[in-house]
Amino acid sequence: IRQAAVAAGLDADPRYQEKLRAMEAQLADFKREALAELFFSRQVAAGSQVSEAEARTYFDDNATKMKTELHVEQILVKGDEAKIIALREEIAGGAPFEEVAARQLPTMLQGERKPWDLGFLKWPQLPQPWRPVLEGMKDGEVSPVIAGPNKRFWIVRLVERRINEGVTFDEVKAGLMESLKGIKVAERRERAREWIGKVGLD
Image 1: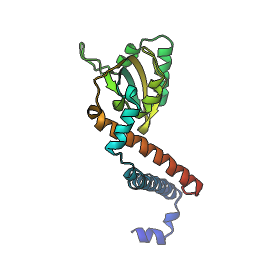
Image 2: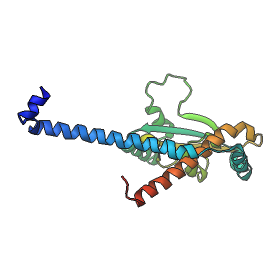
Image 3: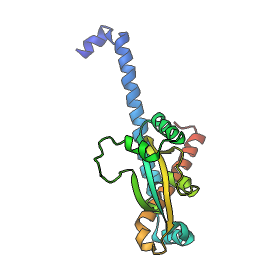
Image 4: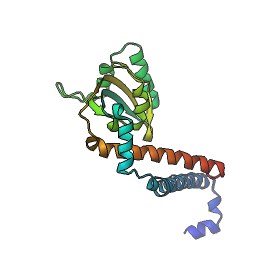
Protein backbone atom coordinates (compact mmCIF):
# COMPACT_ATOMS: atom_id res chain seq x y z
CA ILE A 1 0.00 0.00 0.00
CA ARG A 2 2.86 2.37 0.85
CA GLN A 3 4.49 1.66 -2.51
CA ALA A 4 1.19 2.23 -4.29
CA ALA A 5 0.74 5.55 -2.47
CA VAL A 6 4.24 6.67 -3.51
CA ALA A 7 3.61 5.56 -7.10
CA ALA A 8 0.45 7.67 -7.09
CA GLY A 9 2.40 10.70 -5.85
CA LEU A 10 0.58 10.81 -2.51
CA ASP A 11 3.84 11.23 -0.64
CA ALA A 12 3.79 14.85 -1.86
CA ASP A 13 0.68 15.55 0.22
CA PRO A 14 1.42 18.71 2.31
CA ARG A 15 0.03 17.28 5.56
CA TYR A 16 2.05 14.10 5.14
CA GLN A 17 5.19 16.09 4.40
CA GLU A 18 4.65 18.33 7.42
CA LYS A 19 4.31 15.36 9.78
CA LEU A 20 7.29 13.66 8.15
CA ARG A 21 9.51 16.70 8.64
CA ALA A 22 8.46 16.92 12.31
CA MET A 23 9.29 13.24 12.91
CA GLU A 24 12.60 13.52 11.07
CA ALA A 25 13.50 16.52 13.25
CA GLN A 26 12.70 14.50 16.39
CA LEU A 27 14.88 11.65 15.13
CA ALA A 28 17.74 14.05 14.37
CA ASP A 29 17.46 15.51 17.89
CA PHE A 30 17.52 12.03 19.41
CA LYS A 31 20.62 11.07 17.42
CA ARG A 32 22.41 14.27 18.41
CA GLU A 33 21.61 13.96 22.12
CA ALA A 34 22.17 10.21 22.40
CA LEU A 35 25.47 10.25 20.52
CA ALA A 36 26.68 13.31 22.45
CA GLU A 37 25.96 11.50 25.72
CA LEU A 38 27.82 8.42 24.47
CA PHE A 39 30.75 10.59 23.44
CA PHE A 40 30.93 12.27 26.84
CA SER A 41 30.52 9.03 28.79
CA ARG A 42 33.11 7.12 26.73
CA GLN A 43 35.62 9.83 25.86
CA VAL A 44 35.23 12.29 28.73
CA ALA A 45 33.99 10.59 31.89
CA ALA A 46 36.14 7.51 31.33
CA GLY A 47 39.30 9.60 31.70
CA SER A 48 38.16 11.45 34.80
CA GLN A 49 38.91 8.95 37.54
CA VAL A 50 40.31 10.30 40.81
CA SER A 51 42.91 8.41 42.81
CA GLU A 52 42.90 8.16 46.60
CA ALA A 53 46.22 10.04 46.62
CA GLU A 54 44.67 12.95 44.70
CA ALA A 55 41.74 13.04 47.11
CA ARG A 56 44.03 12.98 50.16
CA THR A 57 46.13 15.83 48.75
CA TYR A 58 42.99 17.87 48.17
CA PHE A 59 41.79 17.12 51.71
CA ASP A 60 45.11 18.20 53.22
CA ASP A 61 45.29 21.36 51.09
CA ASN A 62 41.71 22.34 51.96
CA ALA A 63 41.52 21.14 55.56
CA THR A 64 39.35 24.01 56.82
CA LYS A 65 36.85 23.61 54.01
CA MET A 66 36.76 19.82 54.44
CA LYS A 67 36.02 20.21 58.16
CA THR A 68 33.31 22.81 57.62
CA GLU A 69 29.73 21.62 58.00
CA LEU A 70 26.87 23.72 56.69
CA HIS A 71 23.30 23.63 57.93
CA VAL A 72 21.28 24.37 54.80
CA GLU A 73 17.68 24.58 53.67
CA GLN A 74 16.59 24.40 50.06
CA ILE A 75 13.75 25.17 47.71
CA LEU A 76 13.98 22.98 44.61
CA VAL A 77 12.06 23.50 41.38
CA LYS A 78 12.50 21.24 38.36
CA GLY A 79 12.08 22.54 34.84
CA ASP A 80 10.47 25.91 35.63
CA GLU A 81 13.00 28.72 35.92
CA ALA A 82 10.32 31.42 35.83
CA LYS A 83 8.63 29.87 38.88
CA ILE A 84 11.74 29.79 41.05
CA ILE A 85 12.65 33.35 40.03
CA ALA A 86 9.18 34.41 41.23
CA LEU A 87 9.72 32.54 44.53
CA ARG A 88 13.08 34.26 45.04
CA GLU A 89 11.43 37.62 44.44
CA GLU A 90 8.85 36.76 47.12
CA ILE A 91 11.64 36.08 49.62
CA ALA A 92 13.42 39.29 48.61
CA GLY A 93 10.13 41.09 49.22
CA GLY A 94 9.97 39.87 52.81
CA ALA A 95 8.21 36.48 52.63
CA PRO A 96 9.78 34.03 55.17
CA PHE A 97 11.90 31.31 53.56
CA GLU A 98 10.07 28.56 55.47
CA GLU A 99 6.68 29.83 54.36
CA VAL A 100 7.71 29.82 50.69
CA ALA A 101 9.35 26.38 51.05
CA ALA A 102 6.32 24.86 52.80
CA ARG A 103 4.01 26.10 50.06
CA GLN A 104 5.89 23.90 47.57
CA LEU A 105 4.98 20.83 49.68
CA PRO A 106 1.22 21.06 50.29
CA THR A 107 0.91 17.37 51.24
CA MET A 108 3.34 17.66 54.18
CA LEU A 109 1.75 16.34 57.38
CA GLN A 110 1.49 18.38 60.56
CA GLY A 111 4.51 17.73 62.74
CA GLU A 112 6.44 16.04 59.94
CA ARG A 113 10.16 16.86 59.70
CA LYS A 114 10.63 19.83 57.40
CA PRO A 115 11.81 18.20 54.16
CA TRP A 116 13.42 21.41 52.93
CA ASP A 117 15.75 21.39 55.97
CA LEU A 118 18.76 19.26 55.01
CA GLY A 119 20.52 19.62 58.34
CA PHE A 120 24.32 19.80 58.48
CA LEU A 121 26.13 18.70 55.33
CA LYS A 122 29.83 18.17 54.84
CA TRP A 123 31.50 19.93 51.91
CA PRO A 124 31.67 16.82 49.63
CA GLN A 125 27.93 16.29 50.18
CA LEU A 126 27.01 19.68 48.71
CA PRO A 127 25.84 19.70 45.08
CA GLN A 128 28.57 21.13 42.88
CA PRO A 129 26.53 24.16 41.70
CA TRP A 130 25.97 25.25 45.33
CA ARG A 131 29.60 25.43 46.37
CA PRO A 132 30.83 28.71 44.85
CA VAL A 133 27.64 30.39 46.09
CA LEU A 134 27.76 29.03 49.65
CA GLU A 135 31.46 29.89 50.02
CA GLY A 136 30.61 33.58 49.99
CA MET A 137 27.44 33.44 52.11
CA LYS A 138 27.03 34.33 55.78
CA ASP A 139 24.82 32.57 58.33
CA GLY A 140 21.16 33.40 57.71
CA GLU A 141 21.64 34.52 54.10
CA VAL A 142 19.54 33.28 51.19
CA SER A 143 21.18 32.52 47.86
CA PRO A 144 20.14 33.81 44.46
CA VAL A 145 18.62 31.23 42.12
CA ILE A 146 21.19 28.48 41.46
CA ALA A 147 20.93 26.57 38.18
CA GLY A 148 21.98 22.93 37.99
CA PRO A 149 21.95 20.06 35.50
CA ASN A 150 18.74 18.61 34.07
CA LYS A 151 16.91 21.94 34.50
CA ARG A 152 17.06 21.86 38.29
CA PHE A 153 16.91 25.20 40.11
CA TRP A 154 17.49 25.92 43.78
CA ILE A 155 17.23 28.65 46.35
CA VAL A 156 19.43 27.81 49.34
CA ARG A 157 19.42 29.30 52.83
CA LEU A 158 22.58 28.96 54.91
CA VAL A 159 21.32 28.55 58.47
CA GLU A 160 24.66 28.00 60.18
CA ARG A 161 28.26 27.09 59.46
CA ARG A 162 30.50 25.24 61.90
CA ILE A 163 33.92 23.61 62.02
CA ASN A 164 34.05 19.96 63.03
CA GLU A 165 37.67 19.19 63.92
CA GLY A 166 36.76 15.51 64.18
CA VAL A 167 36.21 15.10 60.43
CA THR A 168 38.78 12.68 58.99
CA PHE A 169 39.84 11.88 55.45
CA ASP A 170 38.46 8.34 55.68
CA GLU A 171 35.09 9.74 56.71
CA VAL A 172 34.74 11.94 53.63
CA LYS A 173 36.90 9.97 51.16
CA ALA A 174 34.11 8.37 49.12
CA GLY A 175 32.12 11.59 48.75
CA LEU A 176 35.25 13.65 48.08
CA MET A 177 36.48 11.32 45.33
CA GLU A 178 33.07 11.40 43.67
CA SER A 179 32.97 15.18 43.98
CA LEU A 180 36.45 15.63 42.47
CA LYS A 181 35.51 13.27 39.65
CA GLY A 182 32.47 15.45 38.93
CA ILE A 183 34.73 18.51 38.72
CA LYS A 184 37.07 16.69 36.31
CA VAL A 185 34.15 15.56 34.15
CA ALA A 186 32.77 19.10 33.97
CA GLU A 187 36.17 20.50 33.01
CA ARG A 188 36.75 17.83 30.35
CA ARG A 189 33.24 18.34 28.98
CA GLU A 190 33.91 22.07 28.63
CA ARG A 191 37.22 21.45 26.87
CA ALA A 192 35.51 18.96 24.56
CA ARG A 193 32.78 21.47 23.72
CA GLU A 194 35.42 24.13 22.97
CA TRP A 195 37.28 21.70 20.69
CA ILE A 196 34.06 20.75 18.91
CA GLY A 197 33.32 24.44 18.36
CA LYS A 198 36.82 25.15 17.01
CA VAL A 199 36.72 22.33 14.47
CA GLY A 200 33.24 23.29 13.34
CA LEU A 201 31.39 20.15 14.37
CA ASP A 202 27.73 20.17 15.40
